[in-house]
Amino acid sequence: MSEDPKLGALRKGFLEFLVLRIISGSTVYSADILKKLAATDFATQEGTLYPLLSRLRREGLLDYHWQESEAGPPRKYYRLTGAGERQLSEFDAYWARLNQTIDSLGS
Amino acid sequence: MSEDPKLGALRKGFLEFLVLRIISGSTVYSADILKKLAATDFATQEGTLYPLLSRLRREGLLDYHWQESEAGPPRKYYRLTGAGERQLSEFDAYWARLNQTIDSLGS
DNA sequence: TAAAGCTACCTTGTTATGCAAAGGTACAGA
DNA sequence: TCTGTACCTTTGCATAACAAGGTAGCTTTA
Image (cartoon, rainbow over all chains, first blue to last red; front, side, top):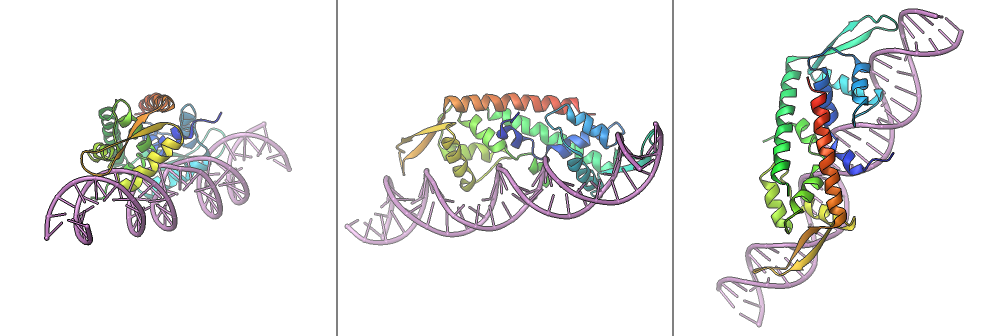
């Protein structure tokens, strides 16, 4: 257990970025997202993801449509809006720039 | 002005990482570090850097020696300790892993 | 030689915010 | 009616970074 907290700090702000990436291209609902994240250092819980999805929707980066499940309650399937795609592009570009910066300041 | 705050959030926790990288290999004092950062998205102030340097030294990742300046007060020149080098390696490895994760979750 | 100004060091609030934890509702199928 | 799935909200914490203020020594200049 017990990861170095310094490494954890590096993850701040990434969840939103990753969720946008996961949604981009595919059509997924919350459990799909959690599953994809579970395999990574960004594993998280419903209680974290739902408020994030709601916020992104309020901000107009996502929308969703209800879809029946074969078994169980219906699900919200998410999709990026145009604004969401644009935001994701910004993230990607910024990410690339951070990588450059880090390389350039390296030993 | 006014950068997208979403992008700013991605920077959290990086300053420590970058400072270690800057110090690694060279021998620098605070103003050198500020200068190198100033050219990047991580530009920051004395009031941010000094507490960080003090903390890293308390944690044993850095040490320093006083050195006279040609003009003005003496300066603290910083250097990585063994533990600091190890921490930096961890950061680098983690960083590489984050990049892989992000790629793998991309569209 | 006194004073002003610059450089370098440092500390103490305060803010912002990402994320986790915990608790809660509703509906479907067995 | 019980279990499992899926939705959601509220509360709190930890901490990174900023802002502002403060001390002291060196150099220059009046």
